[in-house]
Image 1 (cartoon, rainbow, N blue to C red):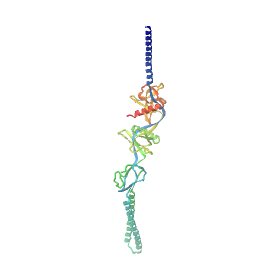
Image 2 (cartoon, rainbow, N blue to C red; image 1 turned 90 degrees about the vertical axis):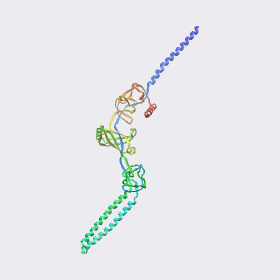
Image 3 (cartoon, rainbow, N blue to C red; image 1 turned 180 degrees about the horizontal axis):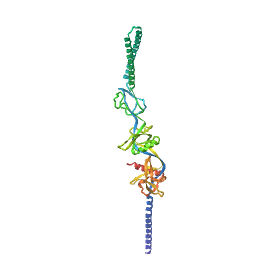
Image 4 (cartoon, helix red, strand yellow; image 1 turned 135 degrees about the vertical axis):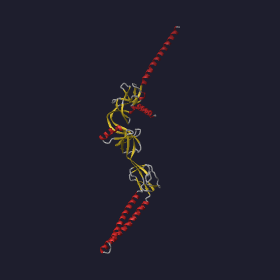
Length: 390
């Protein structure tokens, strides 16, 4: 019996030791898991100090520098069309030809009439000279001489009239060649070859639009008027940058040429006009674009990635990574956001670290773990995919 009870005691003791070890392990492992889980992975960025251009942003429409409807000034049948829709043409290029035969015949007729009247004039001059000689010899009367002079004057007027008619006929003959009045791009053709075109046709032959250079008309709040006027008085023409409607694609750079002479009272805004060279043809008439007017440059401005700026009930803030590895939600003042960078005028210091991705799990005081290299790129890609989901 003693042996049995001893074995039993040993078994109980061993079981207690196992239970004790298991309990100890259960107490330690959850603690380690909590420590790892408390560290939130984020992508960080540095607050940069640099010169930052200050822009005023508005929305505007692209307007063609010149738009001309090519119309015929005479009536006639189109015998050829010498352009393709959307073609780039130069001023003076032939776009179409009207049958010239009726107008050439008119020129020939007027030329023949002039030759007839010129022959009559030459004969009248000879008769005038003969009458002048005869009156000197007493064989002609003064009335005959006066009549002959009048006839010469009349025929000279007829010849001058013929010259004018010939010139008019040649002008009409020139109108049989429809040319582009400006350099630009042709639109949709409004009439086909073989049809008769008239000066009264509202649509004409085609519309030619000049796009080099091209204009942008955009609006800004009227409160910016004084600032713009002062900058125009101080500097060379102010730069204007045209972006796509979503503000992501830079299209062209131009200069401010005009402030409209009145304020639009209904909207409390001012209209401005800018000119662009448009050599790449990225600006198109009627296109809606985002305009940025450069009015100043902030020296030694503080910038962070725009993705670092968050918005809460109290306004904008960023998560600053403190030296102890925790995140601090700090209010900031952002004056502008351009090209993915936010200009911060209050709340940050140069070289501080801020969270630019992974904020959705953070709270004030959360422990963070900074991702670097490929891990940071993958995290940023994941964030970009999530932001693209509506």
